[in-house]
Image (cartoon, rainbow, N blue to C red; front, side, top):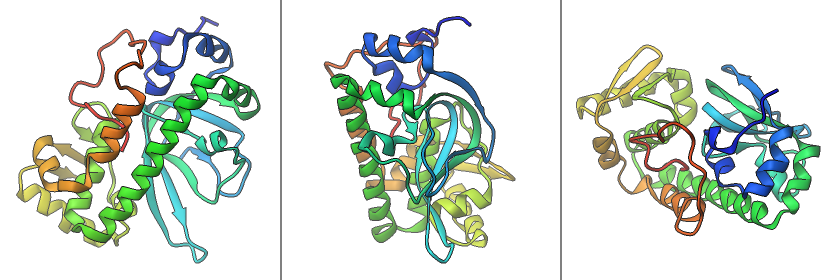
Length: 256
């Protein structure tokens, strides 16, 4: 098997690993295809693997005791699935699964835990967890203080941050899960954004026409977690190993 090189990876956290820590981790990383609905973290079951997502989009979903559910955050190439391990937690009531197919680099939890003894790795991943918590906080803020079409604009921007190109393969069922509304209400909210010439929605796909317009519509409910990710993960003094290809182009910010 060809040795994995740090500059070849797309995952933004792996690119920020110290070189010595990446060299220890690289032989343990296994490439994995991540089809739609692939389970990354099962609720209340031991987290057996940590997955650095290279492409695609994963959803973390919270579910109530009476089986009501809502998406609480996205995970893409900016992050990892199974991050409660970093906090010393071996399982969680939340579930994480793929909403948009992609691929990743997976490592068994028992092999990953020793890497956390590296002080720079631990600091990097704890900073990442902080941005995850901030995204949750701003999801709560958006739900309480912003209109549904503003929240939809925010979620679409976060998807756009994580998926190449302007076509987002998102179903109405997924959008309903994101927004915590009935599927029938999704169409109306998409029509509002279409009327503002920000997107074009077709069956199973949302095309971004004007990202700046979406940012304007989302207002204050988008941007703070993204800026914090840039400051803590990719800010000055944190040199990255750049991948062979170009970075995301319009995707200036990628956590959220």
